Length: 241
Image (cartoon, helix red, strand yellow):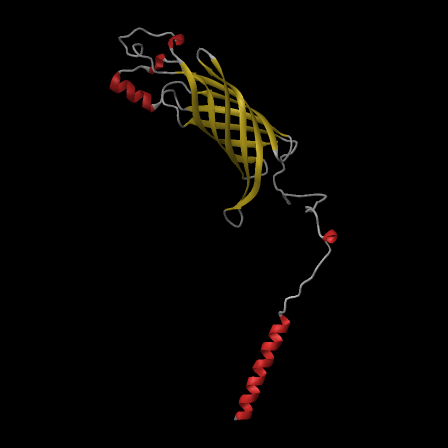
Protein backbone atom coordinates (compact mmCIF):
# COMPACT_ATOMS: atom_id res chain seq x y z
CA UNK A 1 0.00 0.00 0.00
CA UNK A 2 2.93 2.35 0.77
CA UNK A 3 4.38 1.52 -2.63
CA UNK A 4 1.10 2.49 -4.29
CA UNK A 5 1.00 5.77 -2.37
CA UNK A 6 4.59 6.53 -3.30
CA UNK A 7 3.85 5.86 -7.00
CA UNK A 8 0.82 8.14 -6.90
CA UNK A 9 2.82 10.96 -5.29
CA UNK A 10 5.60 10.55 -7.84
CA UNK A 11 3.11 10.73 -10.73
CA UNK A 12 1.59 13.94 -9.34
CA UNK A 13 5.03 15.59 -8.93
CA UNK A 14 6.04 14.64 -12.50
CA UNK A 15 2.74 15.97 -13.89
CA UNK A 16 3.20 19.34 -12.14
CA UNK A 17 6.78 19.61 -13.46
CA UNK A 18 5.68 18.83 -17.03
CA UNK A 19 2.80 21.34 -16.79
CA UNK A 20 5.16 24.08 -15.63
CA UNK A 21 7.63 23.28 -18.40
CA UNK A 22 4.92 23.27 -21.09
CA UNK A 23 3.67 26.75 -20.17
CA UNK A 24 6.98 28.35 -19.35
CA UNK A 25 7.15 31.89 -20.71
CA UNK A 26 9.67 32.50 -23.44
CA UNK A 27 10.89 36.01 -24.08
CA UNK A 28 11.58 36.82 -27.73
CA UNK A 29 13.54 39.96 -28.52
CA UNK A 30 13.19 41.39 -32.03
CA UNK A 31 15.16 44.27 -33.50
CA UNK A 32 13.21 47.52 -33.62
CA UNK A 33 13.80 47.97 -37.36
CA UNK A 34 12.02 44.66 -38.08
CA UNK A 35 8.79 45.68 -36.30
CA UNK A 36 5.81 47.03 -38.31
CA UNK A 37 5.74 50.85 -38.39
CA UNK A 38 2.26 51.35 -39.95
CA UNK A 39 -1.02 49.51 -40.49
CA UNK A 40 -2.33 48.61 -43.94
CA UNK A 41 -5.94 47.80 -44.83
CA UNK A 42 -6.71 45.07 -47.38
CA UNK A 43 -7.64 46.27 -50.88
CA UNK A 44 -10.24 44.40 -52.93
CA UNK A 45 -10.13 44.74 -56.71
CA UNK A 46 -13.88 44.29 -57.25
CA UNK A 47 -15.91 44.86 -54.09
CA UNK A 48 -19.49 43.58 -54.51
CA UNK A 49 -22.01 44.64 -51.86
CA UNK A 50 -25.03 42.77 -53.25
CA UNK A 51 -25.08 39.56 -55.28
CA UNK A 52 -28.06 38.14 -57.15
CA UNK A 53 -29.99 41.46 -57.10
CA UNK A 54 -33.53 40.77 -58.33
CA UNK A 55 -34.45 44.42 -58.95
CA UNK A 56 -31.88 46.31 -61.02
CA UNK A 57 -32.51 50.08 -61.10
CA UNK A 58 -29.33 51.53 -62.60
CA UNK A 59 -29.99 53.46 -65.81
CA UNK A 60 -33.78 53.11 -65.52
CA UNK A 61 -36.68 55.52 -64.93
CA UNK A 62 -39.34 55.22 -62.27
CA UNK A 63 -42.77 56.88 -62.07
CA UNK A 64 -44.76 57.22 -58.84
CA UNK A 65 -48.35 58.04 -57.98
CA UNK A 66 -49.03 58.82 -54.33
CA UNK A 67 -51.41 60.17 -51.72
CA UNK A 68 -49.91 62.69 -49.31
CA UNK A 69 -51.05 63.34 -45.76
CA UNK A 70 -49.87 66.48 -43.91
CA UNK A 71 -49.60 65.12 -40.37
CA UNK A 72 -48.96 68.47 -38.64
CA UNK A 73 -51.15 70.84 -40.71
CA UNK A 74 -53.69 72.48 -38.34
CA UNK A 75 -55.96 74.47 -40.67
CA UNK A 76 -55.79 73.59 -44.38
CA UNK A 77 -56.95 70.29 -45.85
CA UNK A 78 -54.35 67.68 -44.96
CA UNK A 79 -54.65 65.64 -48.18
CA UNK A 80 -52.90 65.90 -51.54
CA UNK A 81 -52.34 63.79 -54.66
CA UNK A 82 -49.05 63.73 -56.50
CA UNK A 83 -46.82 62.29 -59.20
CA UNK A 84 -43.08 61.67 -59.18
CA UNK A 85 -40.62 60.87 -61.96
CA UNK A 86 -37.12 59.56 -61.11
CA UNK A 87 -33.98 58.56 -62.97
CA UNK A 88 -31.70 56.04 -61.27
CA UNK A 89 -28.16 57.05 -62.18
CA UNK A 90 -26.80 54.09 -60.21
CA UNK A 91 -27.85 51.55 -57.61
CA UNK A 92 -27.05 54.18 -54.95
CA UNK A 93 -28.43 57.44 -56.39
CA UNK A 94 -31.74 58.57 -57.91
CA UNK A 95 -32.84 62.02 -59.11
CA UNK A 96 -36.45 63.04 -59.54
CA UNK A 97 -39.20 65.62 -59.76
CA UNK A 98 -42.29 65.66 -57.50
CA UNK A 99 -45.53 67.53 -58.27
CA UNK A 100 -48.42 67.42 -55.77
CA UNK A 101 -51.85 69.11 -55.82
CA UNK A 102 -53.51 69.96 -52.47
CA UNK A 103 -57.16 69.24 -51.80
CA UNK A 104 -59.36 72.27 -51.19
CA UNK A 105 -61.20 72.90 -47.95
CA UNK A 106 -60.20 72.78 -44.29
CA UNK A 107 -59.00 70.25 -41.76
CA UNK A 108 -61.32 68.70 -39.18
CA UNK A 109 -59.69 70.87 -36.49
CA UNK A 110 -60.51 74.05 -38.44
CA UNK A 111 -64.12 72.89 -38.80
CA UNK A 112 -64.32 72.43 -35.03
CA UNK A 113 -63.01 75.95 -34.45
CA UNK A 114 -65.63 77.29 -36.85
CA UNK A 115 -68.43 75.45 -35.05
CA UNK A 116 -67.31 76.56 -31.57
CA UNK A 117 -66.01 80.08 -32.19
CA UNK A 118 -67.39 81.03 -35.65
CA UNK A 119 -63.89 81.37 -37.13
CA UNK A 120 -64.01 81.05 -40.92
CA UNK A 121 -60.54 79.90 -42.00
CA UNK A 122 -61.64 79.79 -45.63
CA UNK A 123 -60.66 83.46 -45.55
CA UNK A 124 -57.02 82.54 -44.95
CA UNK A 125 -54.68 81.62 -47.84
CA UNK A 126 -54.21 77.88 -48.21
CA UNK A 127 -51.53 75.77 -49.94
CA UNK A 128 -52.39 74.88 -53.51
CA UNK A 129 -49.49 72.99 -55.10
CA UNK A 130 -45.99 71.70 -54.38
CA UNK A 131 -43.18 71.13 -56.88
CA UNK A 132 -39.83 69.78 -55.71
CA UNK A 133 -36.64 68.35 -57.13
CA UNK A 134 -35.84 65.23 -55.11
CA UNK A 135 -32.58 63.34 -54.55
CA UNK A 136 -32.62 59.82 -53.11
CA UNK A 137 -29.59 58.15 -51.53
CA UNK A 138 -30.33 54.43 -51.62
CA UNK A 139 -28.71 53.10 -48.46
CA UNK A 140 -29.85 49.48 -48.08
CA UNK A 141 -31.18 46.83 -50.46
CA UNK A 142 -32.59 43.61 -49.09
CA UNK A 143 -35.17 40.86 -49.37
CA UNK A 144 -38.07 40.14 -47.05
CA UNK A 145 -39.90 36.80 -47.12
CA UNK A 146 -43.47 36.62 -45.85
CA UNK A 147 -44.05 33.02 -46.91
CA UNK A 148 -42.05 30.42 -48.76
CA UNK A 149 -43.46 31.69 -52.07
CA UNK A 150 -43.80 35.47 -51.43
CA UNK A 151 -40.64 37.58 -51.31
CA UNK A 152 -40.45 41.39 -51.28
CA UNK A 153 -37.31 43.15 -52.48
CA UNK A 154 -36.86 46.20 -50.26
CA UNK A 155 -35.03 49.50 -50.69
CA UNK A 156 -34.36 51.94 -47.82
CA UNK A 157 -33.26 55.44 -48.81
CA UNK A 158 -32.87 58.98 -47.58
CA UNK A 159 -34.29 61.95 -49.48
CA UNK A 160 -33.35 65.61 -49.86
CA UNK A 161 -35.66 67.97 -51.79
CA UNK A 162 -35.74 71.61 -52.85
CA UNK A 163 -38.42 73.54 -54.73
CA UNK A 164 -41.49 75.65 -54.00
CA UNK A 165 -44.87 75.53 -52.27
CA UNK A 166 -47.57 77.57 -54.03
CA UNK A 167 -50.35 79.16 -52.03
CA UNK A 168 -53.42 80.73 -53.63
CA UNK A 169 -51.75 84.15 -53.62
CA UNK A 170 -47.98 83.57 -53.45
CA UNK A 171 -45.20 81.02 -54.04
CA UNK A 172 -42.61 80.27 -51.36
CA UNK A 173 -39.22 78.48 -51.70
CA UNK A 174 -39.14 75.23 -49.75
CA UNK A 175 -36.78 72.45 -48.71
CA UNK A 176 -37.49 69.00 -47.32
CA UNK A 177 -35.61 65.99 -46.04
CA UNK A 178 -36.79 62.57 -45.02
CA UNK A 179 -36.58 58.81 -45.24
CA UNK A 180 -38.38 56.32 -47.48
CA UNK A 181 -38.93 52.63 -48.10
CA UNK A 182 -39.91 50.67 -51.21
CA UNK A 183 -41.35 47.16 -51.24
CA UNK A 184 -41.04 45.60 -54.72
CA UNK A 185 -43.65 42.88 -55.16
CA UNK A 186 -42.56 42.39 -58.81
CA UNK A 187 -39.45 43.51 -60.68
CA UNK A 188 -41.35 46.61 -61.86
CA UNK A 189 -44.02 47.43 -59.25
CA UNK A 190 -43.44 48.58 -55.70
CA UNK A 191 -45.22 50.11 -52.75
CA UNK A 192 -43.51 53.36 -51.79
CA UNK A 193 -43.61 55.15 -48.42
CA UNK A 194 -41.99 58.56 -47.82
CA UNK A 195 -41.83 60.53 -44.59
CA UNK A 196 -40.61 64.10 -45.12
CA UNK A 197 -40.22 67.26 -43.06
CA UNK A 198 -40.95 70.40 -45.12
CA UNK A 199 -39.67 73.85 -44.17
CA UNK A 200 -40.79 77.04 -45.91
CA UNK A 201 -42.19 80.50 -45.35
CA UNK A 202 -45.99 80.52 -45.08
CA UNK A 203 -48.83 82.86 -44.02
CA UNK A 204 -50.17 82.54 -40.48
CA UNK A 205 -53.87 81.58 -40.84
CA UNK A 206 -54.89 83.28 -37.57
CA UNK A 207 -55.82 86.96 -38.01
CA UNK A 208 -57.48 88.87 -35.21
CA UNK A 209 -60.66 90.73 -36.15
CA UNK A 210 -60.98 89.33 -39.68
CA UNK A 211 -62.17 85.70 -39.43
CA UNK A 212 -65.72 85.93 -38.06
CA UNK A 213 -68.74 86.29 -40.38
CA UNK A 214 -69.63 89.77 -39.04
CA UNK A 215 -66.08 91.07 -39.56
CA UNK A 216 -64.58 92.53 -42.76
CA UNK A 217 -63.06 90.03 -45.21
CA UNK A 218 -59.27 90.36 -45.14
CA UNK A 219 -56.91 90.59 -48.07
CA UNK A 220 -54.36 87.80 -48.36
CA UNK A 221 -51.64 90.40 -47.82
CA UNK A 222 -53.01 91.10 -44.32
CA UNK A 223 -51.76 87.76 -43.03
CA UNK A 224 -48.32 87.76 -41.46
CA UNK A 225 -45.73 85.16 -42.49
CA UNK A 226 -43.37 82.86 -40.63
CA UNK A 227 -41.23 79.77 -41.22
CA UNK A 228 -43.49 76.72 -41.13
CA UNK A 229 -42.49 73.07 -40.57
CA UNK A 230 -44.82 70.35 -41.81
CA UNK A 231 -44.39 66.59 -41.51
CA UNK A 232 -45.79 64.80 -44.54
CA UNK A 233 -46.39 61.09 -45.20
CA UNK A 234 -46.67 59.94 -48.84
CA UNK A 235 -48.04 56.49 -49.71
CA UNK A 236 -48.25 55.23 -53.27
CA UNK A 237 -47.26 52.91 -56.09
CA UNK A 238 -44.05 53.01 -58.09
CA UNK A 239 -43.40 51.56 -61.57
CA UNK A 240 -39.87 50.89 -62.83
CA UNK A 241 -39.29 50.92 -66.60
